[in-house]
Image (cartoon, rainbow, N blue to C red; front, side, top):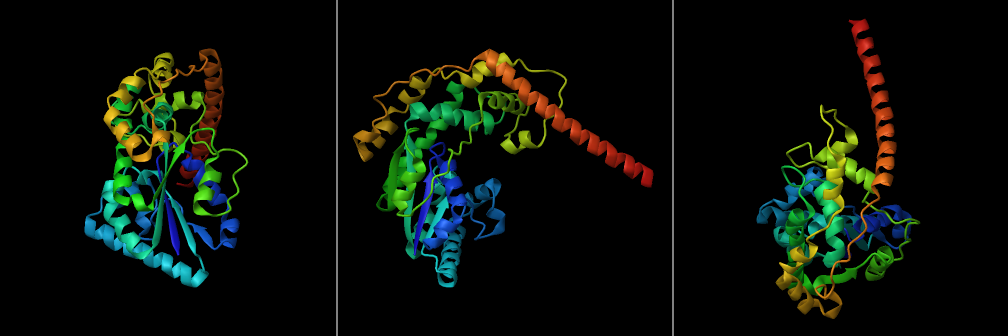
Length: 330
């Protein structure tokens, strides 16, 4: 029995891998393989979402070791009852949580043939994508939205996890350099030795610029962390309308990226020294990406606003009808 754990890092095609795994159940079954998903609900149902994963990562060492044994027993049961020989697990949040999960991973490796897979992207390409995901789409920090330069001083810290994984679990770890030209699903299948059909279209978490801007404007209204679901579930009415041109400048200008990366030169030199010339990120300098055309962006925003207005109108109509019925029945 073998377990492949895809640990990230985030924004390196993880959604494409997870989508392909979830869409190829029959093909995996024919190879005596099973995709376990992203969460550890097999250990306890309360670990079955983002907040549950956070809770899992905060468990004390003894509980993590016990959880590893529970998880290993679950896989052993599936092996005996259903003949599954290869298990696949994928959660990019594991990358940054490595030091916290060390007891869990180490104990799991005592019971299962465990292999870890990580993809690493050049920070010059990764930081703009990460800023969109965790500075705008999912506002992780408290307070207002932060400019690119300020937010990325925090986000770039995710690379600090790579030396940990190499030094602690290097004998079980496969690290691939990711770029947007690669077929990450095919590459992942090659590592696992499984046949895996790539989806017809790439699975992208990043929405188009108009939606990013609208979500950013919405998230900026709240002082606390804002998960993407909050925007998806409701668009709140406010007395004032933000200046979207100012927020657009914050969203799509990546000034300061050279400074952010240069401040962590020692970290990337360490990564280079440990993994070789292919991972020499420091020799590259950032090529500025063209900002979205503001006229086109405003036109697309109107499309979103019209659709949101229709959906909200339908919800209000249903609520009014339900209220009238309740009043009539009293």
